[in-house]
Length: 255
Image 1 (cartoon, helix red, strand yellow):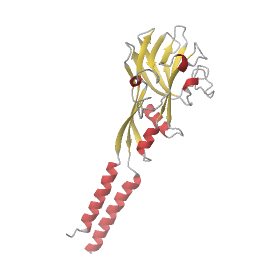
Image 2 (tube, one colour; image 1 turned 30 degrees about the vertical axis):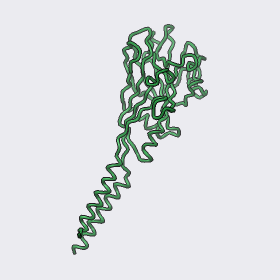
Image 3 (cartoon, rainbow, N blue to C red; image 1 turned 180 degrees about the vertical axis):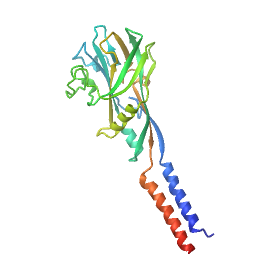
Image 4 (cartoon, helix red, strand yellow; image 1 turned 60 degrees about the horizontal axis):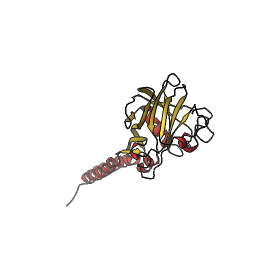
């Protein structure tokens, strides 16, 4: 069977375009210590307390991430760290866009008041969880600000505290998506966060969250990222060149 050059060209374009479309992939990945991406995945989570500025809370109260202000009007701040390398592995070198992000914290218990607003900021220092204190928040002596230097504001959540084992979701924002993109482009592909009472130092109000060391792994802090791998520009260019070559061949033979 004879096939015209125009048909051959169109078929070639279709094959290339199918390959291009198939490279556009929407993905969802959850980062949670001892759960995902693998059972060996580690995601640091601890807190620091102005009332006990030299206390390594990861050792003294390992199950909790406490955020707020205590009865003496002294702040407590939470620190989190997530390794996002798995996203780069799934993208396999292709460019990607971050579609949405959520941080899920599970409540451990409540204290002082029935509600608290917690602000989420980027944290720009490598966190050594087991050595973190109020006077040395990153645990490595690099962050010289007591309680931790607040980076870019990312999100805020008004929390009505009830019984334990309730999920608190810090919803998607453009700033949070940008923080993910920045982390993916960094040397260690790690996102670092700090949780702060929005009205810190004003009145006693505390939010108790489960840490990465809490006994139930499903209640560990969880970062959920939805992203899309986009096609390579070179593939799209190849499709255009194939079409151009096919139609050029057809015109020559038609003369």
